[in-house]
Amino acid sequence: MIKPALQNDEFIADVKWAGREANRLHLWWLGQSGFLISWHGQHLLLDPYLSDSLTTKYADTSTPHVRMTEKVIDPQRLDFVDIVTSSHNHTDHLDAETITTLLAVNPDLTVLVSDANREFAARRLQVPSTRLTGINCERPMDIGEFAFHAVPSAHEKVETDDDGHHKCIGLVVEAGPWTVYHAGDTIRYQGMASLLRKWNVDIALLPINGRDPLRGVAGNLFPQEAAELGRDMNAKMVIPCHYDMFEFNTVDPAEFVRAAQKANLTYHILKCGERWSS
Image (cartoon, rainbow, N blue to C red; front, top):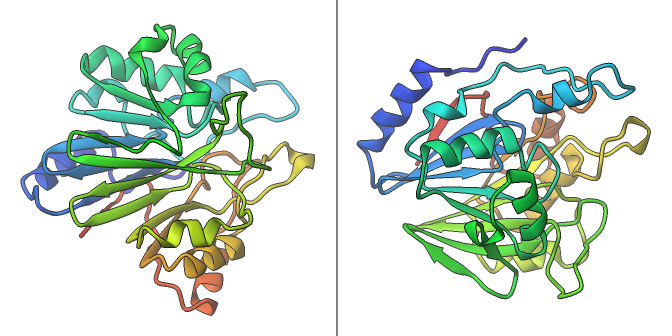
């Protein structure tokens, strides 16, 4: 398996070291679409998948989820997290084993989910729905040192519940002068780039594994599509994600590099467990 750039004690030491530079934005890729962001002494986890729940669930099926990359860290060691998010209800973005452990070691943890998914998420996490914080595309919110704006994502298509709240969301996160866009899982939809341009995104975290119904891979951007979206939304930098986690659902990031260079797009390829700092 792929060994993370930083793992276990080394990863924790790096997070603590970065915390001493509180006026810089620090970001670590945790695999799949999971990221840890540190800003002004607070820590935000975006869509973490830090278990083997899917490998266990799909063992001996037609779609085995064979892990490619070792876990960066046991979530039990992340006892300093302030906020965790879930962009939608797929387990690699709403993992009960990861989030219930985080709740146990962070009693004041804010769990941020789409309003459309709040009841479902509460059942999966076995907590009252009032324990979760809902967000929708019409209601931005400030939580600690971060400001959050939900935007629609299209995991095959844009879907809403009966109240018009989006089932799959991305998050535009403002941290001081920095703006980070975490797409969750999405394909490109009409008007997406123009919607995102208004935030002057510094860092776009975009999936690149594509889509293939024959392999059970739900809708995501292909590498070329991610590069073109990053260019068209005027992102200052794109960090690709959602690859090298499961053997049946991955892509060579070199495909994204070639597309990004063709699009004249600034990009950064992170190794799992590696930090990027402003």
